[in-house]
Length: 252
Image (cartoon, rainbow, N blue to C red; front, top):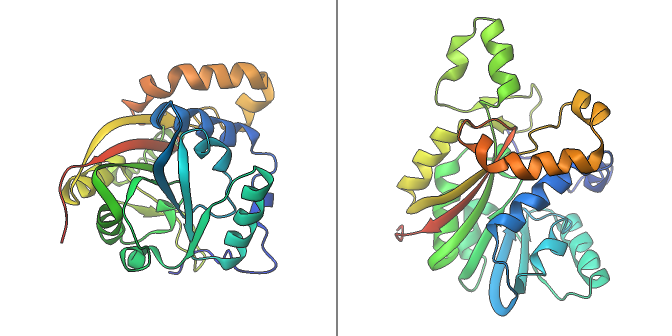
């Protein structure tokens, strides 16, 4: 399988987020919990797979040095425009995540990778590359598409598909595009082997089902999301798991 083609002139990734205000807001809530609460002009972050700069408005409150890394030139051009609209000057880097350590010219205080892992078939290689571009004791903010979220568990148990609970990844598309849901325990094992330790985790977009969005007012939905992200992370309830991870060892 190959990664999603965000360079396709007929595909507008910004439109994917139309009608997904809840999901976007839930991720912003999570990031604000995991990122530094104060601004530091010398603090650096690189958003791997940062696309059109959707999360720049969050990063600008904590970091004076912001870079976006993406394989799509089209999305990086959009990120530069979005940064300008926010009054920001950012660095954009084009390339393949599996070669990122050879493409950046420094190490960062923070690396974020949001809505990217589901396109990655080799998490070991990706995490090793992230380790190489982080400073000593640097922080990795990672989002994982959760294989064992509550709805998927219920659906598969009703089908008596007990193999679904195995600690592996599963493809959720029949197309020639990599789209994988990962078991959080599997991801955590790879992180440990890649020189990281998990400091915190959150369950995110816990109420994304259409019935919740229809019946519960938006602001109340976000208050529920905010209050339950930590508690629900212990059972990996939501479709996305956000991690705050510390680099503790170098990898070769």
